[in-house]
Amino acid sequence: MTGSRSRRYGLRLVAILYLAAILLGPLALVFFRTFEHGFGAAWDALSTAETVNAFKLTLIITAIAVPLNTIFGIACAIAIVRRRFPGKGIVNAFVDLPLALSPVVVGLALFLLYGRDGWFGGWLLDHGVQVLFSLPAMVIATIFVSLPFVAREVVPTLREIGDEQEQAARTLGANGWQTFWRITLPAIRWAVIYGVILTTARCLGEYGAVAVVSGRLQGETETATLRVEERYESFDLAGAYAISIVLALIAVLVLVGMTAIRPKEEAA
Amino acid sequence: MSIVAKGVSKRFGDFAALDNVSLEVPTGSLTALLGPSGSGKSTLLRVIAGLETPDAGEIVISGEDATGLAPQKRGVGFVFQHYAAFKHMTVRDNIAFGLVIRKRPKAEIRQRVDQLLELVQLQQFGHRYPAQLSGGQRQRMALARALAVEPEVLLLDEPFGALDARVRAELREWLRRLHEEVHVTTVFVTHDQEEAMEVADQIAVMNDGVIEQVGGPRELYEEPASEFVMSFVGPTTRVGESWLRPHDLEILLAPSEDAAEAMIERIVHLGFEVRVELVRADGEKVWAQLTRDGCEELELAEGQIVYVRAAAERVFA
Image 1: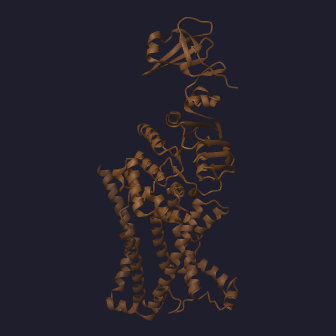
Image 2 (image 1 turned 120 degrees about the horizontal axis):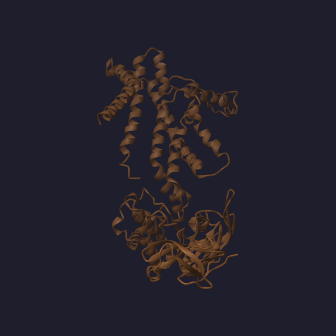
Image 3 (image 1 turned 45 degrees about the vertical axis):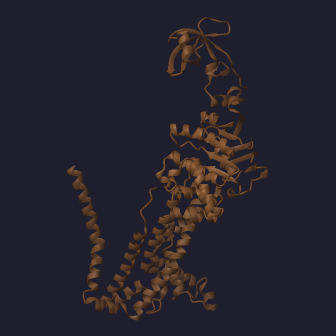
């Protein structure tokens, strides 16, 4: 009895210490440093035009990338689980590619495609479309790195619920679209929501790929994460910490928000 | 409202699930597709429903060719073995689903759902979720859901297979009564011959992707067309080249010219029925089914030498 109890508490202690050392400690330190010189200093750092612009840009990119990847992720998961088509294995593997590929490589690949000498870049520039060093490239890069999360959450849930409910809906007169909205989507909604949380977090935090394709023009193509790096390199530690804190707060808010709207799970 | 399948074939890879199957289900009948697992009975049902596309052959429902028709346009109600309950909806919403899809007026839907809840005796459970129901209740809900849209045909895929024996017996009787009330053309799949015999008025026995025989319960039992049908629809015992029902094996105490000598190896009392296992002089094992009274009258004992005679036997080519 006592043996198993002490083992249980021991395990908890290890988990908490690990989290504290890796996660909570550094976060707390950032928090402390931000407000070391009072709220005023932190506020000043945050309210510069460049920083405000950086947050705006991050939010715009996220607002475009998350809905697109949600729709793509759900469609992709349904195709992988429910449909049979040639090349399905390849699609399945490709969805995971962004997880395996370093974001910097993704950025370089976009350079090769959309640069002046790239496959599409020259043609697009001739027609007055600037992709690199502007919003389109940053959105494409972010979409790419945050692609797998919704599909990866939804695929196992779709497998688990099986297709009998969908078949039942069909025999009751529902067409494919009605079946999706009334049966499939409600059944996978928590997986979708969880996927959206992960995608959002990834979009807010993306650094590598965006750093390569954005050109990092201050006040123009600088996202919040790039701004943190830029402030740090300019020896404005208070500014870097302040922006970091806001990024962390947004992430926490998303998590808390999702937990709050999630009702008590109806028994499976 | 009749269903006709003409020359239906369906392969899954190398496996022929259905091999040129033809079947006629008359209007208003209650037909069972009976067979062991892998015999193609579920596939045939799913082809009728439009949930599988046949490789060859056609399906005609109520005189109209339905072969290429999507399931939602066939006017069939389908009940799945594992209920396929919509887990995120209450019992009421489950039953109302087909009516909501058809955009019927709210008042009409409410009234119809109330009727169906009463029909399947779930009046108290309308606001529960499927997870809060027992298996039998869930299956009754699934039946009500299928009946809500007034289908021309009702198809049930092993509807009672996932339930325990007592609930199964209850639901069988209930299905029989429901069919008498509603009179919708019904086809159900089962691997349980007793279930098929008890509920259906027409049985199609399937094996290895073909229909072996179609007939009434009594006809199948007494006039089986093949060895498979004979052994699938009831107990059999074999004497030489011929097959017979164990209750057709007579036990005589005195020798007779058409009876063979045998020794009683074991007597098993099963209540009303008594099973007598014998070894004939040539070493072949047979068994006879007697009533308790019949057995007592003969005063049989293990080890006793008796004479067995086949009262009705059957030889299959």
